[in-house]
Image (cartoon, rainbow, N blue to C red; front, side):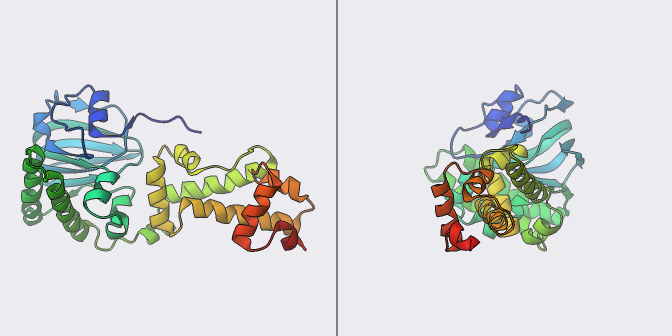
Length: 303
């Protein structure tokens, strides 16, 4: 497995890792928003590499800097809107910060305050590399009051502030979806250009080759496939499900059954040997697993 990068489960975690002030960040509900002028960056500022487990929007009304994700470096300048999600290493730098709002939120917040089916309604949240876009003045002026209202509400003591913030964030997501992602199709991205999907399928294939060769002894779990790409398991699961139509677990089951059928039909290995080649510890477990998904036992299938 690859070595895990520095991971930030929240903006609070990230700022602690970067030795930045955390006074403005409220440790509840997985949501933050504030103007970066309030953070106290010593400019020019260059961050260390990190990987977030949260989503973010950057609204740059007036500021200059760069964001780098893997091999992609993007310039930010006035009237830039930039979206990022929980994937891959990244760094950021700032030369000028005059008015730049950072909005962050996690999956729990999205599902609690907007929709349990958030990724069906806003599938763009799982797109892998989004180029920052300098938007029209008209569009920026339409979205600015929303994030300013969020900032004001975030600082309030209202007992329903997170419900209000959920509605305001939903409005933001609808406007971003319409402006940036009107033609976005996650299945198309999964078929053509998703590096996460490609890497997952390659590792899935290699792992079963390793099982057959005796190099590996147990079937990988979702956690193992996520660690290979330095991703959170929930995020990998959401990406694979949204962009292929099948969950990681279903991919693993389908691959296991396909390999089992092939070995039963085209090899002279005993069922006990096949059991161990596919990472099962007990023949009874393998037989029950196979019958559950195929409808007949391995012995019956081989006849």
